[in-house]
Length: 315
Image 1 (cartoon, helix red, strand yellow):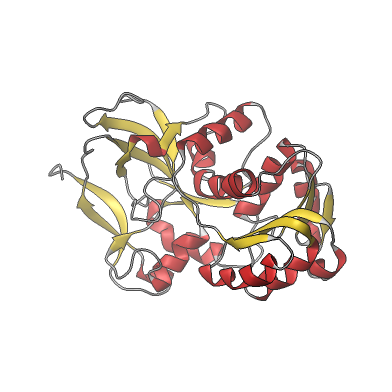
Image 2: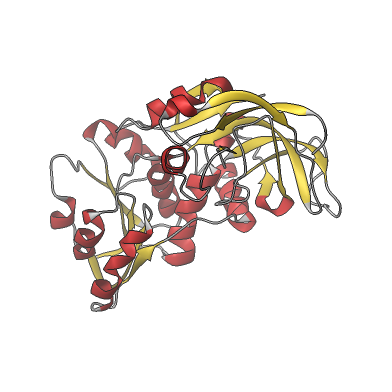
């Protein structure tokens, strides 16, 4: 540590949003191969409040939440040549280990970041990494989605879903998106070809012959949505490793299925940046909260039906 301090949001116990508290803590220093980023904005994701309540990958507190970060390089560690102080960067460092993005400074491996696209402000950039990399790794790395294929995206108005719609559309896929009717126009503008209101129809009954399904719902939906896939298709489920229970059932039809966990991915970030620069990808922005109101950001995020990404403004 540097001997200097910084503002951060910490928690000492697991629980509701009220356990998140502003504090002063030691400011990190970049190690070998790392950069120190002064955080301008931090994204808020469902894994944040799951970790706050249950510990998830971080175990018992104390810890600092947050993985999405956009900011400015303050210092570079030994051997770093990708960046220099003053560069604007964004990324999803260290996931699923602690990154501590709910803080004024983050130190992490340089290759967990990319230069921030000039077309985005820091709040928009902080909304992209975790959700965007999740969508891209599912669609491209696992699903190998191609032009003309039929892609079903559950919960398409969500953080991952609305980015997945755009990434799938950029490959020329036919995108079937599920969302409440109030969100259909927004998703159609992002590239969805068919819109289904999951409160009005049983999506897994009416949709058939798709090549790829992105399941952000989990639970009973994972097994039910297998029926929408053609033989040989691919299902990626995001909520929990428990969704791997469908693997034997899927294998009977030659369907690849199971849980996927996003990983830091500089190549994926660079691809996302390219889509931003060419106008094919943009985050839908929800409310922004100052760092000290992280608890309020979680309260809003946990409400069903929130459209757009929530961010914390830091610098």
